[in-house]
Image (cartoon, rainbow, N blue to C red; front, side, top):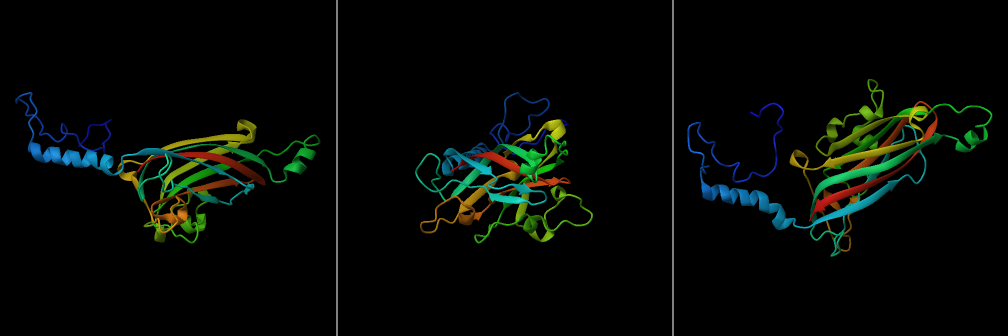
Amino acid sequence: MYRSGYKRSFAPKTPQKTTYKRPRYGANRASYANKQFCGRRTRLAVGSAKRFLASRSLNDEVFASEEELGRSNPKGEYVTLPSLGQGVNCRHTNRVKLWTINLNGHVNFAPTDQLMAEETAGASELSNIEGYVGVFIVLDRMPNATQLPLFADVFGPTPNNVNSLLDQPIRVDQLSRFKVLMRERKYVNIDLHGTLLTLKRFIKFSGRNKILTTFKDMGDNTSGRYGNVRENALVLYVIWESAVQSIMRFSINSRIVYFH
């Protein structure tokens, strides 16, 4: 049991943590239960990542909407991982360990017919745009090389007892394949916040959320795209929900720190 206010650590154990607890009236010197076994166990736990995945690199990518995104129309994009090569931003093996991902972007909102809105801006006041922006990062454990999974394939159709797509759970028959790593939800009101919204989110893949991605790398296909991933791909979904006829444009920059 851990004391209240303290979190359990999933980091590899150090030799100090593998010692026996000192008796209440015993000596102050730490005593090892099995010094040789504890040392070997610690070296395997700590040195495994350094021995096989010694290099650390960054991978930047920008997700931008080529066209306006309408309401209740989810947009899905796969997160491009590093390709095989000898460069600084390339991976040297057929697997990488994802460590962190940092999202930083902007979202812009406008009426559905922006040209008509600009023409009538002087004559009448525009209606307020109000709604919710949702950003999902989903782990696909068994990617399908033929096509990217749609939002409905992961979460299914919206049932009657759920009012929003942002509250959708994963389909029961897809729980073994997909896992939601991040579910971000932002309230939008242009009268209060303006037409520009900033999105920032940082995720660390460690402990129970650790991700080890493997690639196929068959023939000349050694890229980091979704079709070349054998296990554990990342998919990004962006959703705009509003009762007002409006559109959304987004530009999100993602930075992934990985070991290879």
